[in-house]
Structure formats: C-alpha cells, structure tokens
Length: 258
Ligand code: CO8
Image (cartoon, rainbow, N blue to C red; front, side, top):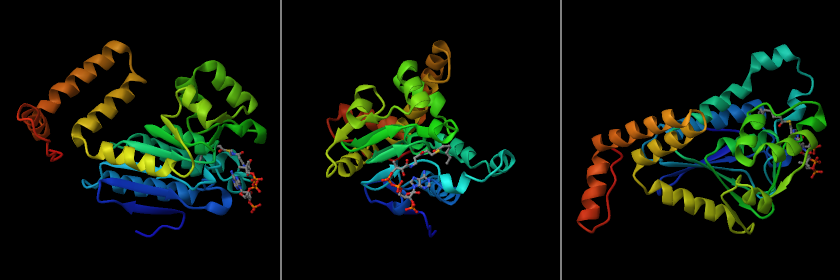
C-alpha cells in the first residue's frame, strides 16, 4: 500500500518500521496520518515475518501533537463523528511489542502516541509535554490516564495543568522512558532493541506483553490468575518444547512462532 503521511519498512530481522512523515509540520497528527498509521501497524501486526514494531518520527520531532489547524474550527459534534481518537484503541490492541524511537518534540497527541507504545527509546534532545491547556483543551488520547500511571499523580498534574515539560533525562528518571542516547545513536539503538525482541520466542513475547498490560487494568489476584493461564497455555506451543530442549541440549533455540 502507498501512504502519503508515513513511510514503512519491513526488515529482514523481523522489525516493522513506521515513520511519521510530515516533517514541515513537526509530524502533527492529522486524521489521514492517524488512519495510515493504524492501517500500517495492523498490516505489520498480521504479518508473521514481523515480530516487533518500531514507530518513529524524525530528529526534530516525534510528533508535536494533533494537527491543530485541522481541528481548530470543528464543532463538538464533528469531533465526535470523526472520532479519530478511537483509532488509538486499535493501536493498544496490537499483539506485537511496539517501541517508540523519540527525538525532539513529543507533545500532546504525540506524547500520548509514545505512551501508547510498550517502550520508549529517546534521544537526548527529546522534549515531552502535554501542552493542551495552552490551547483550551485537555489531552484526549489517554494522556490524563496513562501519564499518572507512568510517572505518578503529582508530576502528571503539573505537566497537564501547567504545561511542565520533561527532558529526556527527566523522563527516564521518572520511568516514562526506557533509555536515552545521543541524537546520532537513538534510532539505531531503538532498532537494536526491537531486533533483539524480534529474535525471541514470538508467542511468549506476545503473551508476556498482554500479561503486563493486564497488570495495569485488573486487580492483583485476577492478573496473577491471567498470567498463570497464559504460562500454562505456552506449554501447548512448539516454541516451549524447542526452547527447553535447546537449554537442556546446550544449543541456541530456533523459534517457529507456533
Ligand atoms: N498542529 C498543526 N501544525 C503544527 C503543529 C500542530 N500540533 N505543531 C507545529 N505545527 C506547524 C506550525 O503551524 C508551523 O507551520 P507553518 O510553517 O505552516 O506556519 C510548523 O509546524 C512549524 O511550527 P512553528 O513555526 O511553531 O515552529 P517552532 O519551532 O517555533 O515551534 C513547537 C515548535 C513548539 C512544536 C510549536 O510548533 C508548537 O507549540 N506546536 C503545537 C504543540 C501543541 O500544542 N501540541 C498539542 C496539540 S493538541 C493535542 O495534541 C491534543 C491531542 C488529542 C488527541 C490526539 C488525536 C490525534
């Protein structure tokens, strides 16, 4: 499929890359970009050769938020009918891990997109913020819910109520970002992490991702019961037999994703 607002790449190492590509607008997320992003990720998710997603922008910006020019004149009813934000729900249901490689501005809906990913690798120049109150709205794609879970209520309040932004180093200190690298290195390091994950037992990785996400949405006893069922289920896979046989036989496993 050809896209106008994103670039896609399927790599031999099992990583599927989606690059936001509206550089002149700091990759502002308009409706067309959101639809293309969702389509591309769903397509990659359904491709057995892809085992880890990587989303990125460019060095200047991951994304500076929703496209303000596109939204500025819309009514509440038009926003409700367009409901671009519901595309986010599909992103959070992707089976394969999703890594965001973030540099420069990561603001508003851009930050919400990064937080909807499973891990964030940032460049030292990354700037995270939720500036929506400066234009008369609030985060609309999960920011008020994911940010306090990620960094705690006090700092989330300051960021969302008073446009306090975080540097990459701060974001790593507060647990929002996994790793920070110099700008020349962040993308390749994110790619390396994605390729490492893509080389692991695919069904186990997917089951683990799902179980960790359950931890944020269920009481502990239910989450533990869910984890146990997923653990037992993996004994129905060929990869479990292969992984344990390879350990016993002192050799590297060959994963089938079956
Ligand atoms: N929307 C539309 N256009 C944008 C956006 C944006 N979010 N951000 C930057 N641009 C455009 C500018 O309009 C400008 O275009 P032009 O050259 O045609 O005038 C171009 O990008 C360059 O921008 P600046 O001239 O402003 O560049 P600066 O380097 O001076 O500033 C900033 C860069 C700080 C990133 C600044 O552009 C800025 O503050 N941008 C807006 C940030 C913001 O408020 N983001 C939050 C938006 S609201 C939101 O995300 C709500 C999410 C709801 C759900 C998500 C659904 C998809």
